[in-house]
Amino acid sequence: MNSSNSQKRGSIEKKRRDRINLCMTQLKSLVPEAIRKDQFEKLEKAEILQLTTSYLKSNSTAFDFDFKRQGFRDCMFDISTYLINCENLSIESQFYSRLLSHLKHSLK
Image 1 (cartoon, helix red, strand yellow):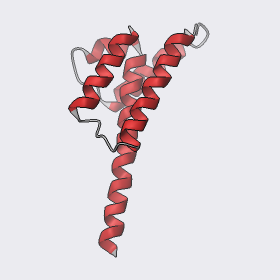
Image 2 (tube, helix red, strand yellow; image 1 turned 120 degrees about the horizontal axis):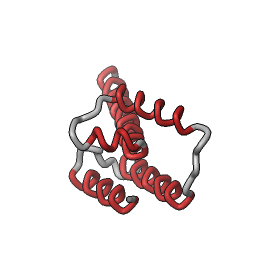
Image 3 (cartoon, helix red, strand yellow; image 1 turned 180 degrees about the horizontal axis):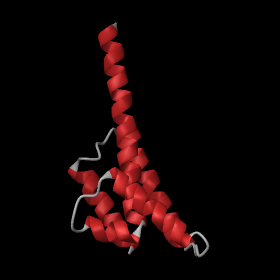
Image 4 (tube, one colour; image 1 turned 90 degrees about the vertical axis):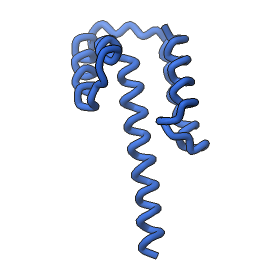
C-alpha cells in the first residue's frame, strides 16, 4: 500500500512540476526581454519571474491589450494544459515542443 501511495504522490508531483514548467514557458513567451535572452541562454525560473515582474511593473500603467493576441495566448495555454493533463503528454516530447514552437511563431 505504501508503494502505491508513493507512486501516486510521485505522479501528482510530476504533474505539478509540469504545470509550473508550462507556466514558466508561457511567461517567457510573453515578456520581450525573456524572449531575447532565451535566444542566447537557458533562463532559470527565478530569472523568468524577475523579468516578468520588471516587465509588469514598467508597463502597469500602459497596458494596451491586443485582445486577438491575448485570445491566441489563452488558446495556446488551453492546448498545452489539455495535452499535459488529458493526453498525458510530457513537455519534453518532440511533438509538444514542435507544436508550441509553431504556435509561438504564428503569434508573431
